[in-house]
Length: 402
Ligand SMILES: [Zn+2]
View 1 (cartoon, rainbow, N blue to C red):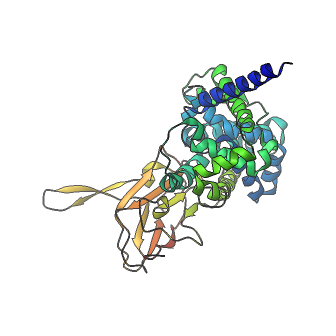
View 2: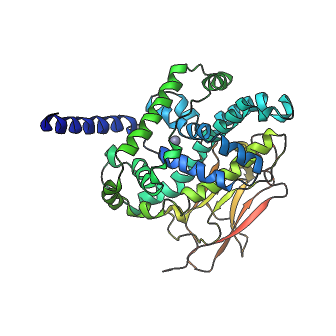
View 3: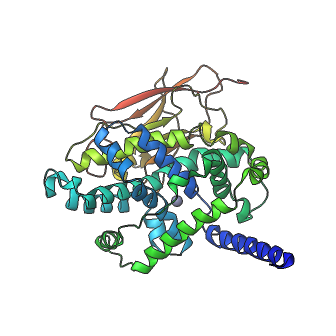
């Protein structure tokens, strides 16, 4: 082969890769990248304490992996299923479907042991994990990178979700065992969407899946130790912290292990005690600035919450003829010393799992300790109390100049 022609072909291939990556990623601008999703799921399998569930996930890792990346394929291929599959109404519908096919209550004691059920359960756990991981990653890790790693460019080639994937691919040896290879249970998924009142086509799901497989290949093609030198300089805080800090790989994997345990027990007709993941957790204190995501309180549930039980109002008479509605939420923040409720904004999106609280401001004295209380009236999607008797946690705010 003539040398010039070879050079030309290499250049052309690079152009195609860049073009395809741009197309794939243009619409996927939020959330963790696909490789990070699979690594979080993989780490979470190692943290699951129920041995039967852990073995099921380990033995069906390829179904878990394709489930964990599938939701973003809907954005890339412009299908409704993308946004829908990120949120609990879909998670619940998928769970109901799996329960009817494989659950102990409706299908017999050991139906879940069949090969079909094992794959289906692993795939469902992957899909459910995706939306929860996005909430955790977006509100803690991605938001803090936005806050600290200001970059004045919206080029898709340096989008944070692509670069965090490239960081992870270098650190995890290209995560080859997590390359998506399995095929999603398309007929089951079509049925789940029909149960939700949406007639999707097989092609929509197939296109989404193919896009994610292509993206996984392309990301690995454009990642190497040299690209990492450039990439690492773009979001230095993210580069150094995406694995070990809140919202990152290990924090989110811990939350996913709790989430899977909840759904797993539920599949067997049992109700697991709630295991939420809280920020600030042990070893952390809140930052004083509420512009910093670490200056806000984040409560990541291990089960879908009932929105009406979480966010409520009560009527209060303030005069003979005046009644006002005031917030009476099931998660409240108080000054631990005085018991006074802290005013602020409770953020809860699309019936998701993450509840975040941003106060109007934190106290200016450095020694204030706050109490986060989840009231007994908080219910999950099945109308069961999340914390019978309620639960509370003490948290502190970092002092001035600390
Ligand atoms: Zn996503």
